[in-house]
Length: 462
Image 1: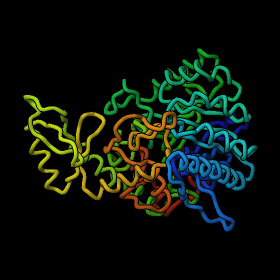
Image 2: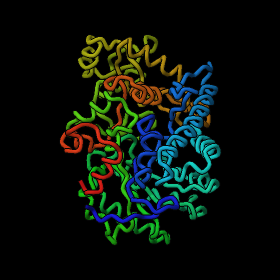
Image 3: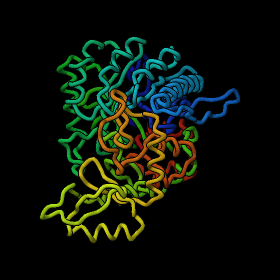
């Protein structure tokens, strides 16, 4: 048994084990409530959460408006209704035990309105808000207004210091903790900065020491650091527990809770995760947010990787080096290097006959079917992000003013699909880099455990 004592989280003494809130329908009120029931912290996702009809059936999102800003308003309404519904489910399942948190993606367009709308309509049901994917500088103000604790997700001491100086110093009372999410190990979107090499992971130890130093310098030594990203078994983190250089800690589990009886993901998704091998999770930058993210290598991701590998630079005017003309989208002539002719011909002969321009003065090659689907996805955009590289939607200006990027994808569509029984090979499947451990973990040898069984196992250190 690991020597990990209960601590105060969101105003209540609980065991410092936290379920990470994952994307669209990968953590919901059922799983969050089950974690809270065990006097831990359960987290449901506030990104396109499900809500229900009078018979308890999930109401699948259907966008009826013809123009994007109006579909965007439909999306916000769905998100608020879903957030309230999941908070209610979590509260009922918890039996009043533990704490219930909601996780929010700051880069989601109008995330502030969604947080405000859910907290207004679910008063007393949500104890904390975690938020990352960007710098959620208004999170402290929003949460404090409703007497709810807030937990920014950062990947460095510097990121937290920026948030503190810009906003959080005015809302100290409800700062419940700081989530350190390791950018090389976490699933989903990661907080790698431009100064950090995705191929050169750093040990989280010194980054955590630096974060604690920063907190102490700000007289925040009582604030717990919640360690996230790559957390599987507490035995892996013995040197981090009761360590004076790191201070008070809790642990957030993102991937491991996905295979439990209460987890909302499909059986096919769970089966895939049981079969993943080490190295099958790829850290890449195809997300329309522009952030790095980690996902299981499947047909969907392989197609994006092949498209990127087939990329060729061009110029709009011929010169001594760029001499070979090629049609882009059948209307525009650009020029590529003669040395790239074989690379272009190979793709075109393989059926990738649609040539599309990227925002970086390069071209990529696609099948007519993929191009048709891409145009449809852009036309059906609901404005889910504050800025989208795939559709060029911008919440602030209506458009980013840049070319849409054919090396990306509609993130709302693919995550919603896989979260509602869509193909696990033809959609994006986020996962942390420890997912391969399912295959050898004895806990899963005899079937899928309950949340209680998982938590009991975690407490042993295994």
